[in-house]
View 1: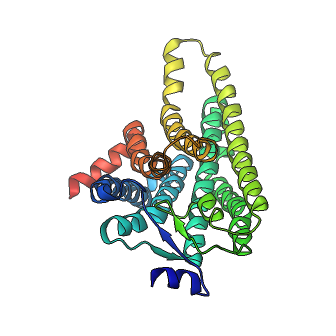
View 2 (view 1 turned 90 degrees about the vertical axis):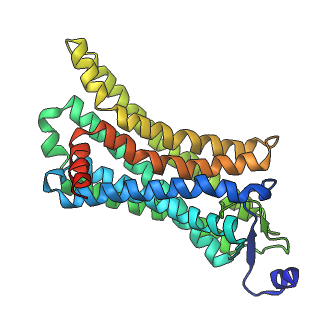
View 3 (view 1 turned 30 degrees about the vertical axis):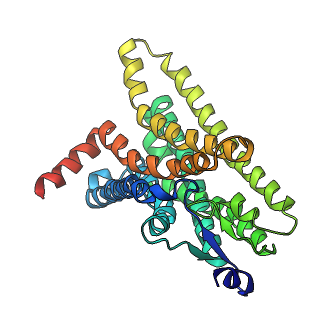
Length: 312
């Protein structure tokens, strides 16, 4: 009956299998998934709440932290609730429209987050290399405009991905070996020519990541050059310390993403459950740790969070 429904429905239905080979351990796997998601929501909503309530935190750096918190919530929410439905209740079915919607918003949030990391690098560059003009170069209005540009860029780059998928015919075998609707996994379900889809996916991956990493690298090259011009080692460490939180968040965001993408495309000898666990790691760990890192490294934010915690 399930096979009949899959093949006869006018709207294709896919089956998300979760983590193949580890089905017996799905309940146990759901524990770190759910705990990471809860910690991520608590941490990121705390950042949004505290910054919104405290007038003294209405500054460019904290607005950027809010953008990062928003994308972290969006990324994890696109994936984790559905994954938990698979692990706990075996609710594996998802329509083509639902699958494409999940994929679109997931890639939209990840693309926006990459742009936010670039803006953060520029923020650190201005703060260290041109501190006297920081308040005039990076105003709240400028940050809002940069955020809008990041959103528009993400929509323009990601929107063709679902549109190209909608033109494809899909085979009877619609079992996706994943916890969420990843683009290449959906493409593999098609019986048509997927050359354009695969090519566009590769191009935007390298354009987004390549361009953003180049801009971040350029910012840090100028930052390091400015730091070494400082007279004392104490000044060196003080300047570097203002960048450590951003560097940690950047490494946590890009490293697992690039590793997961490259192993998925080129690591054909790697077991499928390893691919899937790596892909989920990228969507679980950074959203959970980002607010903790910024909370620890940013004294003003840490003090304000402590103020509201003590009131409870």
